[in-house]
Image (cartoon, rainbow, N blue to C red; front, side, top):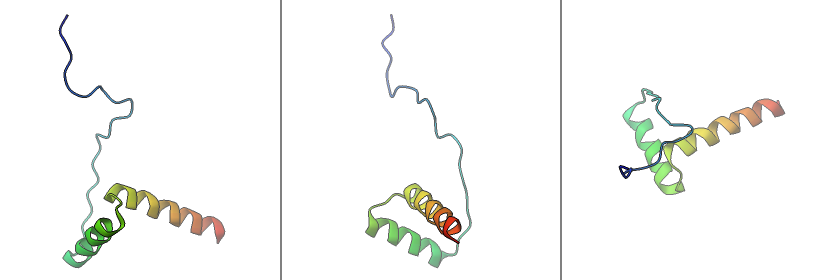
Length: 59
């Protein structure tokens, strides 16, 4: 039997990509905030979406 190597396959692989266009200033602001807050870019996007959903539910 061959021994498997590497990471085990994921049940929900992240294979899709998302591309957005931003200005250099926006990019710098996003990356600076991510570094200072300790959140990843994906975490910031998820938190932003949740904040907007909550704001819409309260409106």
